[in-house]
Length: 167
Image (cartoon, rainbow, N blue to C red; front, side, top):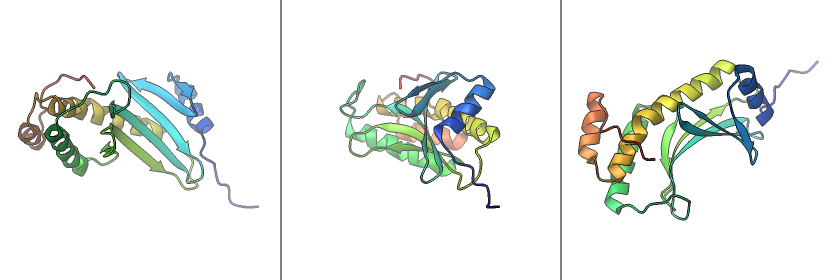
Protein backbone atom coordinates (compact mmCIF):
# COMPACT_ATOMS: atom_id res chain seq x y z
CA UNK A 1 0.00 0.00 0.00
CA UNK A 2 1.39 3.42 -0.97
CA UNK A 3 1.88 6.41 1.27
CA UNK A 4 -1.25 8.55 1.72
CA UNK A 5 -0.79 12.04 0.25
CA UNK A 6 -3.67 14.31 1.12
CA UNK A 7 -4.40 16.78 -1.61
CA UNK A 8 -4.90 20.44 -0.93
CA UNK A 9 -7.77 21.98 -2.83
CA UNK A 10 -10.42 24.61 -2.29
CA UNK A 11 -12.85 21.98 -1.01
CA UNK A 12 -10.38 21.20 1.80
CA UNK A 13 -10.53 24.82 2.93
CA UNK A 14 -14.31 25.01 2.50
CA UNK A 15 -14.71 21.92 4.69
CA UNK A 16 -12.85 23.66 7.52
CA UNK A 17 -14.96 26.81 7.05
CA UNK A 18 -18.17 24.78 7.18
CA UNK A 19 -17.02 22.83 10.23
CA UNK A 20 -16.50 26.11 12.13
CA UNK A 21 -19.58 27.86 10.76
CA UNK A 22 -17.46 30.65 9.25
CA UNK A 23 -19.20 32.70 6.57
CA UNK A 24 -17.69 32.83 3.09
CA UNK A 25 -18.43 32.98 -0.61
CA UNK A 26 -16.64 31.27 -3.45
CA UNK A 27 -15.86 33.79 -6.17
CA UNK A 28 -13.74 32.85 -9.19
CA UNK A 29 -12.23 29.79 -7.46
CA UNK A 30 -11.32 31.74 -4.31
CA UNK A 31 -12.87 31.91 -0.88
CA UNK A 32 -13.82 35.47 0.02
CA UNK A 33 -14.53 36.08 3.68
CA UNK A 34 -14.12 38.62 6.46
CA UNK A 35 -13.05 38.28 10.07
CA UNK A 36 -13.34 41.31 12.37
CA UNK A 37 -14.12 43.47 9.31
CA UNK A 38 -10.90 42.36 7.58
CA UNK A 39 -11.70 41.26 4.02
CA UNK A 40 -9.72 38.16 3.12
CA UNK A 41 -9.23 36.16 -0.07
CA UNK A 42 -8.04 32.55 0.14
CA UNK A 43 -6.85 30.50 -2.79
CA UNK A 44 -5.08 27.22 -3.36
CA UNK A 45 -2.19 26.40 -5.66
CA UNK A 46 -2.96 22.70 -5.97
CA UNK A 47 0.09 21.82 -8.06
CA UNK A 48 2.52 23.24 -5.50
CA UNK A 49 0.30 22.45 -2.46
CA UNK A 50 0.29 26.03 -1.21
CA UNK A 51 -2.52 27.80 0.60
CA UNK A 52 -2.56 31.48 -0.39
CA UNK A 53 -4.25 34.08 1.76
CA UNK A 54 -4.28 37.81 1.12
CA UNK A 55 -5.94 40.97 2.33
CA UNK A 56 -6.29 43.78 -0.21
CA UNK A 57 -5.38 47.04 1.53
CA UNK A 58 -4.73 49.75 -1.05
CA UNK A 59 -5.95 49.46 -4.65
CA UNK A 60 -3.40 49.91 -7.42
CA UNK A 61 -3.57 52.23 -10.40
CA UNK A 62 -6.43 51.17 -12.67
CA UNK A 63 -8.29 49.39 -9.87
CA UNK A 64 -11.59 50.54 -8.41
CA UNK A 65 -10.98 52.90 -5.50
CA UNK A 66 -7.47 53.90 -6.56
CA UNK A 67 -6.35 57.27 -5.22
CA UNK A 68 -3.00 58.63 -6.40
CA UNK A 69 -0.48 59.46 -3.69
CA UNK A 70 2.79 61.34 -3.71
CA UNK A 71 5.83 59.23 -4.65
CA UNK A 72 7.47 60.18 -1.33
CA UNK A 73 4.47 58.77 0.54
CA UNK A 74 4.68 55.50 -1.43
CA UNK A 75 8.40 55.28 -0.64
CA UNK A 76 7.78 55.96 3.05
CA UNK A 77 4.97 53.38 3.22
CA UNK A 78 7.26 50.81 1.57
CA UNK A 79 9.98 51.60 4.13
CA UNK A 80 7.49 51.13 6.98
CA UNK A 81 6.21 47.84 5.51
CA UNK A 82 9.78 46.57 5.19
CA UNK A 83 10.43 47.37 8.86
CA UNK A 84 7.19 45.64 9.91
CA UNK A 85 7.93 42.59 7.75
CA UNK A 86 11.27 42.20 9.50
CA UNK A 87 9.34 41.62 12.75
CA UNK A 88 6.54 39.38 11.47
CA UNK A 89 6.68 35.64 12.07
CA UNK A 90 4.12 34.85 9.36
CA UNK A 91 3.05 36.76 6.28
CA UNK A 92 4.20 40.04 4.82
CA UNK A 93 2.93 43.37 3.59
CA UNK A 94 3.56 43.59 -0.14
CA UNK A 95 3.40 46.33 -2.76
CA UNK A 96 3.15 45.77 -6.50
CA UNK A 97 5.73 48.12 -8.01
CA UNK A 98 3.78 48.24 -11.30
CA UNK A 99 0.54 49.73 -10.00
CA UNK A 100 1.09 50.45 -6.29
CA UNK A 101 -1.40 47.88 -4.94
CA UNK A 102 -0.70 46.99 -1.30
CA UNK A 103 -1.71 43.69 0.33
CA UNK A 104 -0.98 41.56 3.32
CA UNK A 105 -0.14 38.02 2.16
CA UNK A 106 0.38 34.65 3.78
CA UNK A 107 1.44 31.45 2.02
CA UNK A 108 1.40 28.05 3.71
CA UNK A 109 3.42 25.32 2.02
CA UNK A 110 1.85 21.97 2.90
CA UNK A 111 3.74 19.44 0.71
CA UNK A 112 1.79 16.29 1.41
CA UNK A 113 0.55 17.41 4.82
CA UNK A 114 -3.10 17.89 5.59
CA UNK A 115 -4.24 21.44 6.29
CA UNK A 116 -5.45 21.42 9.87
CA UNK A 117 -8.20 23.52 11.37
CA UNK A 118 -5.63 24.93 13.81
CA UNK A 119 -3.24 25.97 11.01
CA UNK A 120 -5.95 27.80 9.11
CA UNK A 121 -7.40 29.43 12.22
CA UNK A 122 -3.97 30.59 13.42
CA UNK A 123 -3.17 31.99 9.98
CA UNK A 124 -6.46 33.91 9.97
CA UNK A 125 -5.89 35.27 13.49
CA UNK A 126 -2.34 36.36 12.68
CA UNK A 127 -3.53 38.01 9.47
CA UNK A 128 -6.30 39.91 11.24
CA UNK A 129 -3.92 41.06 13.97
CA UNK A 130 -1.26 42.26 11.52
CA UNK A 131 -3.74 44.07 9.30
CA UNK A 132 -5.71 45.60 12.16
CA UNK A 133 -2.53 46.94 13.73
CA UNK A 134 -0.50 48.06 10.69
CA UNK A 135 -2.94 48.92 7.88
CA UNK A 136 -4.08 52.15 9.57
CA UNK A 137 -0.46 53.25 9.90
CA UNK A 138 0.24 52.48 6.24
CA UNK A 139 -2.86 54.47 5.30
CA UNK A 140 -1.78 57.37 7.52
CA UNK A 141 1.65 57.44 5.88
CA UNK A 142 0.12 57.36 2.39
CA UNK A 143 -2.27 60.23 3.22
CA UNK A 144 0.34 62.35 5.00
CA UNK A 145 -1.27 62.11 8.46
CA UNK A 146 1.83 60.38 9.85
CA UNK A 147 5.48 60.74 8.94
CA UNK A 148 7.56 57.65 8.37
CA UNK A 149 9.81 58.75 11.24
CA UNK A 150 6.84 58.86 13.63
CA UNK A 151 5.54 55.51 12.35
CA UNK A 152 8.95 53.85 12.79
CA UNK A 153 9.42 55.42 16.23
CA UNK A 154 5.99 54.10 17.24
CA UNK A 155 6.82 50.69 15.78
CA UNK A 156 10.01 50.58 17.83
CA UNK A 157 8.16 51.59 20.99
CA UNK A 158 5.20 49.29 20.37
CA UNK A 159 2.68 52.07 19.71
CA UNK A 160 0.55 52.81 16.66
CA UNK A 161 0.59 56.03 14.60
CA UNK A 162 -3.07 56.93 14.61
CA UNK A 163 -6.14 54.79 14.41
CA UNK A 164 -7.94 55.98 11.29
CA UNK A 165 -8.33 53.17 8.77
CA UNK A 166 -9.55 54.17 5.35
CA UNK A 167 -7.93 51.35 3.40
